[in-house]
Length: 208
Image (tube, rainbow, N blue to C red; front, side, top):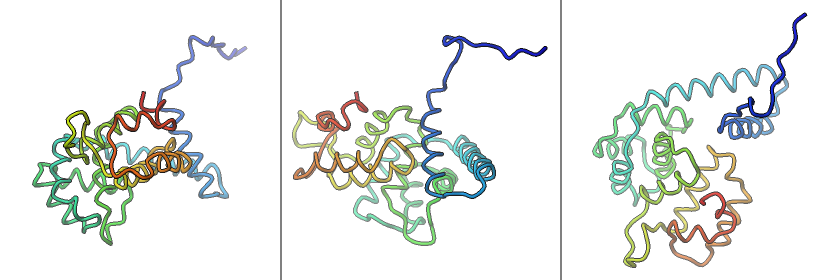
């Protein structure tokens, strides 16, 4: 008689990214309301695997390269992908890397793309393992030096909130409620740095 193995708690290992994957799947499932659960699930995870394979083939750009590309584009919130490509190649980021990331992010290239979103996607290919690592990268790539020597790189609040909004599309933990709480906490400020975010209750635990 076949007997199913019995596992104790110590033998059960839950992958660290499982919760995020399931949250993203659930969010997309609720949004799509599919009539065929099995078919939708199969197609969803097949597409997810294809995107992961595509991104694994990408040579991740450095934060310095991304900062250089952004320096050429920061005065143009939206631009044709060709212009973004020119700035990226000037910074040493290949056309193949950009095209793969844009495809994986399902960005509509038939019109001007949002510069912050495209460069954020390139940053995410660097495999920042934590939310804190991603936010630190955001300040390195998109921030600028402060005249106040006690502060690290600073970002205009409007830009940080826009980046947080773009990040929400790829991180299910960045909810609409979280974005609202952060916006309220930063209300009245022109810019912010990473240390300033640590004082926001909605972000404190995530950035610790």
